[in-house]
Amino acid sequence: MKIPHGFNTMCALVWLRADLTREDGLAYWRGPHGQLVTKLPSVHEYLQHHFSPTDHGFWPVPKGLGGIIPTDWHIDGLTEVRLTSLAAGLADRLFRMKSIFHDEFNVFDRVLPNNSRPGGGRWWTGPYQPEIGFRAIVLIRARYELRGAPFRRFVDGVMAPALLAAGAQELRTHVFQPGGRFTQWTPDVLHDQPANRTYAGALIIGTKDRAAFDKLLGSASVQSTLPAQLRHCVAMHAYAVENTYPVILGGQRQPVTWN
Image (spheres, rainbow, N blue to C red):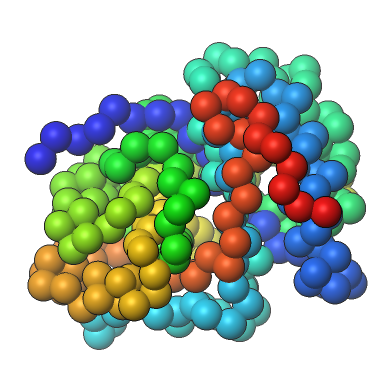
C-alpha cells in the first residue's frame, strides 16, 4: 500500500474553562478565538473537533490495553492544524501569535499542543470531507520503548491500512514528537501533562454514520490489529466528535456558519 505524503501538523488538546457553561465555552472557541487563527499565513488547514461529553471510551481494546477515559482527564476537544511549512509556522509562532496566546485564558483551563514529527501528519483519504456523518478521534499512548520509528510503522503500516480496508471514508493520522507542550506557553492557562497521560499520536476516522463506524470496529481487518495494538500501545482513548468546524481549508478562510 502506498503511504501518502506527510505534512507538518499540530494537534492541541483543550479543556474548556470549568467556570463557564459548556455551551458558552464552545461558542467562544469556535467564534472569537477561532477567528484569530485566520490571520496566520502559515496555517493551511485549521479544524476544531468538539468532543462529545458522554460518548467516549468505545475503542475495542484487547485485554491489558487501556481504553477507559479517566474521569479526571476528560478532554473537551482537539484543534487539528496543518502548516504550509515548518519555517512559516516558526515565523508565526515568533511574530504573529501573541493575540491567540493571550486569548486562550478566556476559554480554556488547559491546552496541550502536540507538534508532529517532520512530515508526521498523513492525509490518507484526501482533504477534510464536510459530508462525513460520524467522526471519531483516537488518542494513542505508545509504549515508551517503542516510540519513534516503531510507533510510526505501527500507525502507517498497521492501523491505517486496516482502517481503510474496514471502510473508513475519512482518515488522517498524526505522530507526535516528544515535548510538544514546552513549545507553547500561554499566560494563565495550564500546560501540565503527567507522564502517564502523554499521547504519541492520533487517528481521525470518519464514516457515513455511527452504525458504519461500529461495523468498522468489528471488522476482521481492525480486529486483526489487536496483537499489534497491545505490543505497541499502552492505551487507545476514543472520543466521538460532536461537531467539527472548519475555520481554514486549503489556506482559505471559511465562511462563518455559527452565531
